[in-house]
Length: 302
Image (cartoon, rainbow, N blue to C red; front, side, top):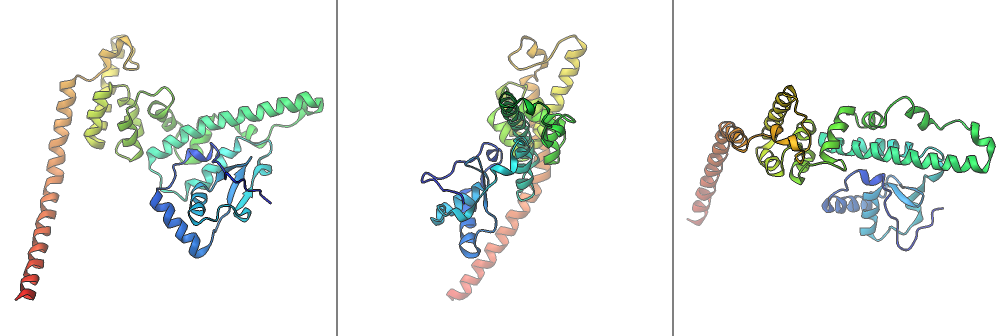
């Protein structure tokens, strides 16, 4: 039986790879649990929530989170296979959430980093066993370790999310530790207003130009990325190595401000041509409906 501490359970870092539900959705989940009960137990690993953070928050709203019957301890199920925890959590969450391609890319990057961290934990434990018992030297590596020998952490993380390894490489430039992407560009990727591959190129631009590209929507980011590629190709043919905005050679790799404004202006014209007729039609329909409502009110009043 699981002992529930008075202070409750914290979430496991692996579980935090996935975004939480909104407060409104958690309230709806709480009402569903009130009506139909908890359908799946909350899973714990080493005293932290591995799967079920949203259910736990819903139970807290109902004041029922202290019951041990809601929890299942999975610690023993993953003995010596810590890095498999990452793939397990991904598989549990992927198909019950509506994730954008950008969110998958960000989660894939986190999964890659977490798999490396968990593998290091397993190695530390194995070294400790080796020191305690010499017979452990020939202990066969766990299934997760054997799999890792056949593929990179990046590719293993990508496979679990049904994305490519290259997508995680792009995500590294947008969401990684040393990224130069603005918060606006990162959010555009999460909300599918920019592809992660285009954003990876635009992230090399100064912050002001990144924001201008984002202001142009998905087409604006795509056009800016295309221009960055062209500039990189031109710079490379001249023997200039393009890098981050802070590098000395970066001026040869950046879009001219006036050129970017022109690109976005052209995008705005395209948007107007595509969207303005629809907007006018909606306004006309609204006006017609209001006219009918007013006519009915006049009839009632008379």
